[in-house]
Image (cartoon, rainbow, N blue to C red):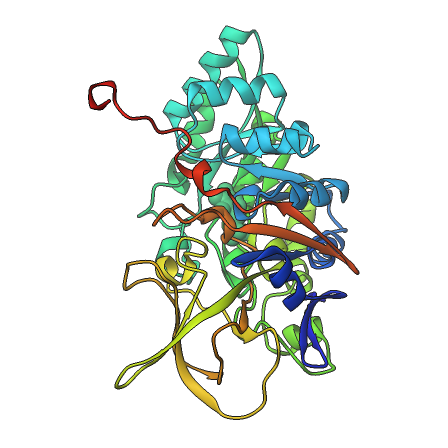
Length: 432
Ligand SMILES: *Cc1c(COP(=O)(O)O)cnc(C)c1O
């Protein structure tokens, strides 16, 4: 299931029509479907039920307090990459003991904070980091649970900016060097070697790269388990989603259509991996971000102007690259549909924002219905790496966010008041 579809001509999120929401709360507006978040979490959870496992949602994909609480209520843990994300989890009612702390640049204060709060594991990415974690743990009289991120050296066949499993990037430790790193870590008195971690990239749409990586690290995981008593293996995240088309109108339903289109599903993922993982007898951690929240969110925007030039038809909308940077940053595709469905001709349109950058566009030459000022559009599949990557560029306030559950909708983040943007700034004394 995914919670966005037309009833009659009106696009809904679950039981809530989106145009009245856009009018009530203004645009740009992110809207999330709790039903979709829940469904994706449970689908993956159920698919993996034949191994001891824990899903740790990757907080960097969507960190709204309501999204985090909804997932915590389902028994989800969290994959965090900063002290700030850990604080968010605590404030959202999540349990640090279900958190793994990833990232290449953990600072001392972050390590200390996470140690005091008792995270399940630090997923370390270098030897100096292991030494730092050991040092901080010694100072606090604690033992730090750690895993080391192995870089399996497989190609994930995804966009260059989201490939992490090859040797040309900053992540993890090369497969050939990892055992030496564990041997060294085992000499550090304040570390407990708890697991092994990998994450090969994002938006991976076939099981093969995962399978290749798992097959490659299986013997390694077994050896490390025997030697150091490891307790878990984390496979990271990276499960891809459907961006095009994100919206299916047919009666077949979302998952059926996804399955028939040869896209990665939790069932396919589990079918190829679970039997490989079972003999390990390790706890399996998964760190999906996009898979859980990507299709669970949309960005609503209003057409401000229609501008025709000699060759082009522009829809200038009130959302911009500062609200959703994926098209500019990753050349990402987002399906764009009107909140009120329109029949008739399609016009090749560029949907662009008001920011003063030529990179500020959401699509180019895409056939869209004839639209005018005041019409609303939805950019689909904006629930992961959407709001979280927003900025204040052009002094544009951060968008508001709404969570829908069935027939209910709640504002879960107010639109940022504009003065809030420069509230921390001051005029230097010599300028006064
Ligand atoms: C970003 C990230 C994830 C989540 O990636 P998705 O593609 O959103 O599933 C998981 N683990 C680590 C270590 C990451 O950096």
